[in-house]
View: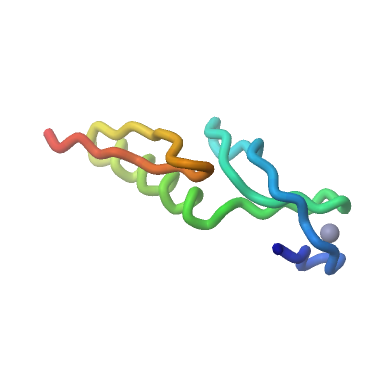
Length: 73
Ligand SMILES: [Zn+2]
């Protein structure tokens, strides 16, 4: 159960939150408020950091969350 920090209602689990082109898991409230799964956000951030460093990385779905795989050069 995930409560909205704006209106206090229970948020619905969704699988369609768009973050920088990736569709991730999170919660959405009737009031329009959205929370992204912090673990998924972490992994997307790691992915972009890896790309910046020139490390090859791929994003894949693991259950209903996102994981990344780094390919060391
Ligand atoms: Zn709300």
